[in-house]
Image (cartoon, rainbow, N blue to C red):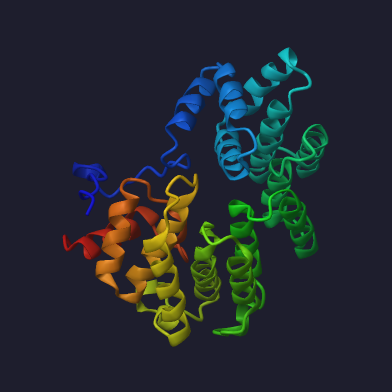
Length: 316
């Protein structure tokens, strides 16, 4: 068994945890630090090396796009290399981040994404940028159309499937528990059609958490997920067991967003009361916690993660 994860903090700051969207991608962390200093050549080299590993490219571009200075430095990059598809894609996703933060008009973000898509027609990342935007601002028809554009270019796109699940879970928020809700059908379909080694096998667990978020926000489930029957029904237990069993056999530990799935699975096992299984997941997560789903429905994710981890590891 791997050694226990390091402490998340000490003293007065012990309850805090800095969630790093880069997860365990050390090359991304290095390039991001260079970008904040205006050294965009490091980002150019990183994205060139990433090539058409579309899940990794999407992960790296969206993380870099969150940097406040990204747009300014990428514009400098484009002055030097006006036809750079990598620079255009990063600028598009950075503009999406600005639009979502209210610092840019959404239409400007859409224009930037369309321009990037024109320079890189095989790349799903500009469409991922638009999907991120319309997941919040657009109609469901927009979301479905953009999801289809991403899948056309990479059928098993991890981030896009998570965004689609989150949006579908919001249908019929007042309907309460419904084992036949369409988000479950979608997640099961996506998991079944994906290759055997695809982390989309975890998508039914993600759907379960996203539906809990919606129901708890609507007031039909307790605000404490561990107190909710959402996680202990027969169907829920079957979903959790199947996902955990799949994870035990998974041999591809290099997926760039695997810690996102591990956090969803650890959250599910904690809510289900399966401490030993949750502990195995927390060991694998180490310091790479993610805000979701620990924040659901409106919780401090640092506290929720630490509490669940401590309980599972027997240190509560």
